Length: 292
Image (cartoon, rainbow, N blue to C red; front, top):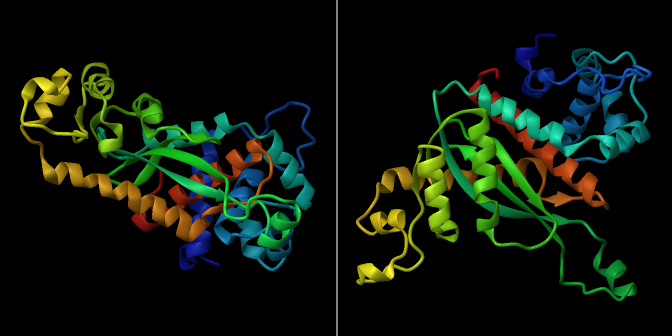
């Protein structure tokens, strides 16, 4: 079967390409039943199909072309995938995002930064009521991300399990993106209005930065900071409204790959969410019809 004739197989093929920069095994003592690439691809497919570990393995039994494309000689047990997710380090997937950003076919990145939250599945209304837990309060994992507005690929992310101001993660995600490729411009909403953010972009990265002022008054002296004062006199609306693309990316991630995390511990919640990001990048590359 021709891979190009199936969008699902094209998606898997692009996900495989994204994982090519990783070693086949993390330990020389590995049994070598399955490679790191194969297990990671299965975690990404799980996000694409929005199913459980057991359902994924059962579903793959009916997909011989997928098994052949991944290069599996046998299907792993669902517990094998669970154990792999527990021992997989988040830094590995951060590295994949950095490699993806480095391979964007543009001289410089044009970044948009924003944050969103994904729900944690912590039981039904009846279950929480029986345990005496608040039924209306739901836990969230906070995702701060930088995307390249030219390709709408995610270039860097920062995850938090507790509430925090968006501004805390701005420099971290921009710096991760800049480590992969030079940055031309950074845009963000008023929540990131801080002189240190402007100074970091202009002086450390040599990039333009458009973040509107939270409060704009008629008194010039009331606006603090050299770069913030310059924004009083206006900025390119066309360039700034590229920021809306990061909200579109969040919408696609939640709609196509799910807005709920089912893992119970923090580490596997991170891995589950990061696999959604890798799945999204493969999905976006499929839409662009380019290979990293």
